[in-house]
Length: 346
Image 1 (cartoon, rainbow, N blue to C red):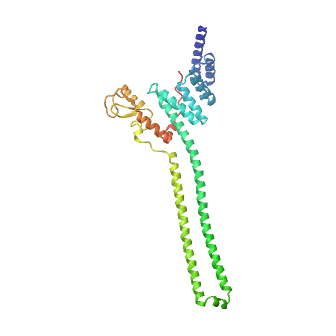
Image 2 (image 1 turned 45 degrees about the vertical axis):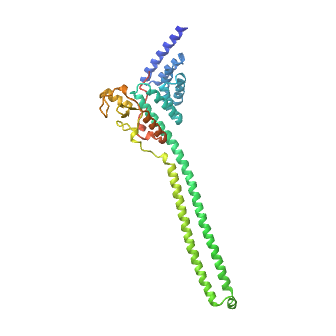
Image 3 (image 1 turned 30 degrees about the horizontal axis):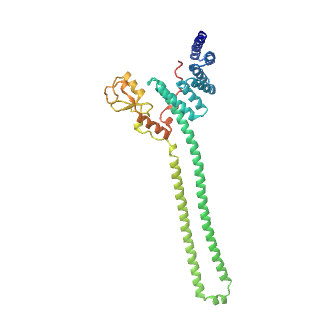
């Protein structure tokens, strides 16, 4: 029985190697067939599933790629490639939150390996892209809703203003009607009736009082209209300030200088601090120590790779900034790069 299992494992490995050769020749269909046969013989080997998933990716078969990655993760929850490619597949389905979760896991796991590996940088770029898309989708939806609510509020303020102006004009119309009625009653009286009521001087005096009354009404009307117009504009301004403030999280923010590496001038991915107290991007610093010399790039003090440690405070600061702003994809050229293919197979 044991020999039979061993034979099946060896045959599966040969099929995997054959699939790798097909893949390098871009014969993705043949590679899929080889990996499928390997899976049939040994379905509990995660790499067979991830290798086949990569072939599906080359053919833009996102659902099959997602299925194979999920199966690989059932077998090994720490499979970096499976988390990474599952994140990419989920991006295609616009499941941004879940895609970000798997890409973050891939980044975390890749950092546990060789810190100078290009994997950290490439996964970071895909994660940056995913977070930017997620932020953009949520931001656009929020801006659309805010615009709808703002238009409703502006319409309500306008209707209230127009109603107040109409009410003021209606009141003026009623006063004019009363004045006209009084003037008509006086004009309809005979001279004798007028004399019986009041002498000519009283009538003349009454006419002057009516003119004064009309002037007072006109002045009051202009004053009230000005007050209503000013109040309407003040409310519109207050409404604009409220919505501008509410929309501020959806506008790109400047990255604080202390969250950027002094060498790359980009936001930290994996910050480390030296004994001199200077923080660098881990991969960049280790590359410097390997190629240039064993010294701190800034202070020139002697420095060995095992002397650098993670700067957790800066790392938390970066995470907090990205969580609040979200538009990490807009900070650099992450939108225009080619997607990473993991450089082949294991």
